Amino acid sequence: MTVELVIFDCDGVLVDSEPTSDQILAANLTRHGLPISPHEIHTLFAGGTIHGVGEEATRRGANLSPDWVDTTYAEIFAELRKGVPVIPGVIDLIHALDRAGIKRAIASNGPIAKMEISLNPSGLLTLFQDRIYSGHDHRPKPAPDMLQRIMADMGIAPEHTVMIDDMPAGFNAARAAGVRCFGYVADGDPARIGDTGAEPVTSMAQIAQALQL
Image (cartoon, rainbow, N blue to C red; front, side):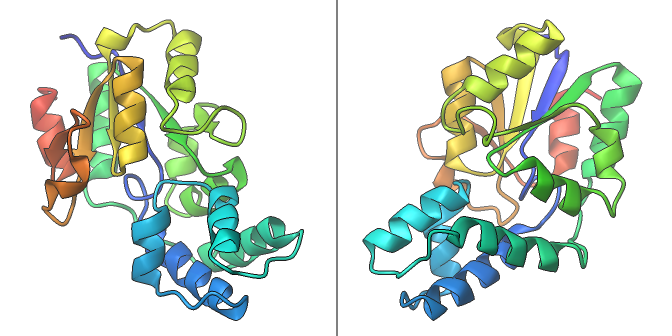
């Protein structure tokens, strides 16, 4: 297999913004009548969308206002602007892809505005400029739409494309798109990969080695 394109998820693969979002959502929903911990937020909603969080929280008894999605995003954005950690080794992997002439893009269920905020301080935003795709503009993962759109825009076939994700939604999107997928499980627990067909890795260096970079 000759790799010509690598598609990255954003949260949990490029930057570690999920703990921040989990803490804010837990405190927010608790204020709105649904006591819940950051761990429960992550277990229930990681890899999904804020719209999906709101729908499920309402079903579970939260009393959310019509503008809850917008106000919650504003709350999350304000905290992300303070900076979030970059996933270890990911910038080295990107530079290795550049040296090999391999294209790259982002496919995230989050909004473009959130990615701009979380990626900008580290310079990652510049490295992916004009190659960022959002589940707010396309059907979100686990649908394969974003991956298919990226491949079509770049003129690259699924058999020459690789996805890096950390959540089942991404693993299943890759499988539906016919794309090889690395499941980044930094904690070393491959349980969430399940039967999705993703290949578990615990470091970006493992991906570089697997791609012979």
